[in-house]
Length: 309
Image 1 (tube, rainbow, N blue to C red):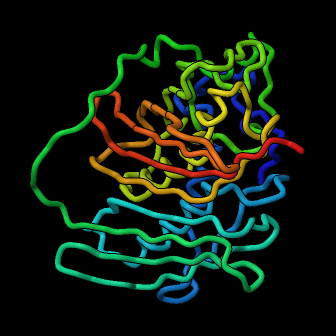
Image 2 (cartoon, helix red, strand yellow):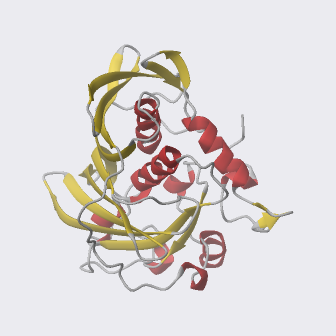
């Protein structure tokens, strides 16, 4: 079990980006793949563990990714997930395994529906519904990708963090097997803090920092995992608040739609906006584009957003 303080766990060490052709982030990415490889207990029952870290609750993206893997393990391989809807019900305990029960709601000619509940200490902590579909041909249109600098023209997170001196402490508590290139300065960056009143928007390029196996479901789960890490940032952006630092934040629900095939170990543009915040909650939406401009996914998440008392 890896020590979360070692160099591979973080992205702003001084080691080369690749050694003997192996990406620097490959060991961390391999641990994420192992984390999503659930133990099958029975036909519809799976067990997963949490990542070795000191967070007081399980990272929501981990539970969502594991639940989707559990659902996918009960679906024929030719059917691909096209949507998921999930609720975060209780904080997860990272010290004990999570049991995932899969309910086979429907197996139709074109669509397969699954419902998954995650259980700890005899209580449901998370619930997910996912739909899978056989490949079909139909109408085609999509949003155009925003005009942004390409990732190779942007500084990687590690170099930028060393130069700026910013240390996003709440973010570093989660393993990050990703190469991140920020287009808009992250709200936690005190040296580049945006003034209040700017648009509630965050943009960055992201890719898994290594090579993933050729499993389409795994690539979807990796994107779902990563989206929960940063999607709500846009809520605080318009108010000059950094979620997890000067604002209390927690995911309440999460929905995603997957439109076209993609690889999570290739560059994905993440375009996040927040249309509303009220009643102690904030809503965030996300669009995800492949590097060639294809809209590959959409996401919507509502989170608990509370100012410290």
